[in-house]
Length: 594
Image (tube, rainbow, N blue to C red):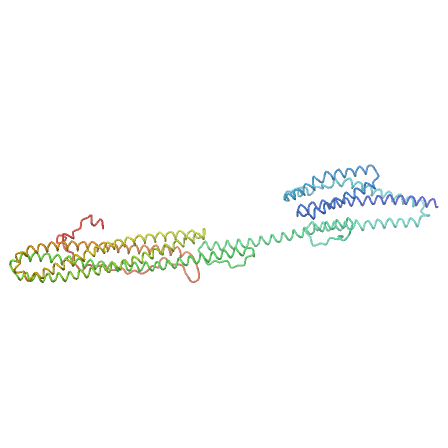
């Protein structure tokens, strides 16, 4: 019995020893495979994040694989199994640079996208399967050996069932307990980890990973799965942040596009009032500030257009009044010319009748007195013409200042339109038109001032001539007392006086021509003022296309100042025949120059 017990015990011991060695080898193969899977997972983690944490875990797993393989070298005695271990080393040596080292090198070079594309392309290819295949064969053999050793043990126990019943029962209980322990310590945790990994694969990152507190390979696998779960949670957060940023950008683009559309339609009150995300607040502020500046500029141009339109209306009205006064002066010159002609005729008649009657001489004296009165009136009329010319000079000076201010305003408007970019391009064209109009007004004012200077010079000459006439008439009045003694020489004196009066008539004709030129100049000034009003109306119409708010409505180009349209003027003096006043007869060349 003792022999049976001893044999049974020996057999049981050998079976237990062999089974233990087989189970240890089996566990080492599992540890090697889990370390390999863990190392493979760290490669993916490093490619995604380029974090050295994953590289460290990769090295740790690589060391665990080497350690497990070294232990199996000590335990495996079967030559075929040892050859398989050599094969595992060779396959792993070939796999590592082809897969792990290659992908991690690409990630270090910043070529993560290329590495990920390689991973996706080989996602369904079990690249580790060839490396693990020999180990799995060893593990299967160890399972077979465990079963064989167990059967051997059972057979030995069956041969000495009666003697070793209790021992056999205890042994069976031990074996069953060991199997249950192995199942609970390895099988069930791995099964739970598999279920967790399946849930992570479908995006359920809220699941808890069990077994992280374990210190064995199962715990390491659980920690690796937890890393995957953390990466998934981080990816979900990144996707949510990107979606929020896209929504914010879409809101900003749509809002700015809508307000730019309103701005293109001329609405300068379309400020952005809706709330923008913090990173776009600066864009909103810059847009509203540019809109306010453009609105202020258009408002200033509109106000300037109103002021210019009012000033041009006043200039046109003053020009009309000056034209009427100039026509009145021309009528006075006609009267003066007629009076001088009559005086010349009477002097000739007096010279012819001097020998016949003293009474006729007295009549001549009366005529001379009347001529002096007319001469005084002529001097007064020319004085009034001179004063009117000074008034015209003042008006022209005011017009010149307005034109200068208009040019300055147009230049400022052009600068502001240039700052506004494409949105102010249309207004820059309007500013150029205003500047050109102001330059034309300055040129017309200069021409008017030059013509007025010539007119004033001619008026001075006419005053001197009339003064001479007055002196001549004074001499005639003084010599009347000697008319009876000097009748013989009166004819000669009258001829000299007739020549002087002819000169006076010529001077008066020159004055009349200058007056006519003044009238034409006034008409040109009036036309320039009306053109200025028209151009300002066009400017106001362009500015009126914009809506600026704040109670400042668009400027209407139709609202023009009311001009007083003078009625048809009829000179109170009837024109004399041209033959009666030779000096007043004009050639075609003179009128062409006029």
